Structures are given as structure tokens and as C-alpha cells.
Amino acid sequence: MPFREINSKMVEATLAPGQKLFSQRGAMLAYRGEVSFTPNIQGGQGGVASMIGRRVAGEATPLMTVEGSGTVMFGHGGHHIQVINLSGDTLYVEADRLLAFDGTLQQGTMFMGSQGGVMGMVRGQVTGQGLFTTTLKGHGAVAVMAHGGVIELPITPGRDVHVDPQAYVAHHGDVRNKLSTAVGWRDMVGRGSGEAFQLELSGNGAVYVQASEEKL
Image (cartoon, rainbow, N blue to C red; front, side, top):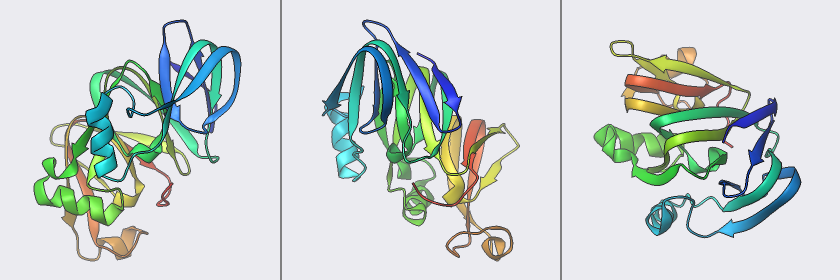
């Protein structure tokens, strides 16, 4: 189901009988109609394996299942919200950035070391995002949170995108990522922790970058 952007910090979803979505607990702002909210103990669509993976990673952000007939408004912490529509591809996003997502999407957990080898593991520690990341795959919409707004940058073959790791929000498509070092890069153009790293993304897809280096 699509999310309607009310403003930069609020979205609305319309539910019909038989549909459901998942959201962070406490993210509901208001609703109309006959809508139920129940704690989700399986980590969303993906079941126990997904839940275990996220708990091992220490990233088991509590979710609730939203069902019924009506409209629900979501927002959290005054964060900016970006709606991402998936058409069969996979979105890679940190669990704590998920505001709400379509219940038809298949949720999983990916070990970051599998993308970029050892450097993928280093990325997790440098960015503070952990060694695992959440994946959402299928056809549907996802609302993610960020500081200061989000821009979508296309990634195409031969045109890699370099991102400050602290400004990275999510990416989708056939994309590989790795950390690369650049002596003096952080001091000259970055504003992060002082580590001379940049996240290099290559392939075919898109990356979402926030206008801040603050964590949620």
C-alpha cells in the first residue's frame, strides 16, 4: 500500500480488510476507522529466522502489526521521513530507521561482511550501525527516517557514488558497498568522527543520503 506524505515528518497509510503493515512501536500518531495494533514478536514478515538474526545483531527494533480498515498517521521523534517504493528489488536499511512498511514485503537480515568482505565488517563498526542490516524485498512501500531530509542518488555502472558513512541511510538495487580510505578526505570535506573513511557504492541502483551526520 502506498504511503501519503502529509508533510516532511508525517505519513498516512490507508488500510483495507485483509491488509496489514508493520511499524515501529510508538510511531502511530492518529488513526480513523477500525484499526488494531498488536505487538509483533516475529520481527515482521520473515518469521523467526529474521527475529533471531536481528537479536544476535542487537538490532531488534520493536515492531507492531497494524491491521483493519481505516487510515493511520505515522511519525516518530520529529525525524524527516522518506517514502521508498520497491518494485521487486531489495532495500538495505538499518532497523532503527524503519518507521513503517508494507506487510507484503519479505523481511530478512544480512551480514554486512558478505558485501565488501572484511571492509563490510569494518563499515559496521565505524558507522555504529552494527554488522547486520535489515533487508526488505518485494513490491510495496517503505517509510524510513532520517535527519534533515533525504536525497536519492542514482548508482549506475561506471559511475560509483562515494558517501560519508555517517550520512548513509539506505540503498537498493544490485549494489555493492565497501569502505575506502582517503588520507585527509575527512578533514577536508567530511564532518564526522575524524576517521578517514568513505563508503563507496557501485553497481546499479540508488543510495539515500541524509543531510546530517547525526544518528537516530
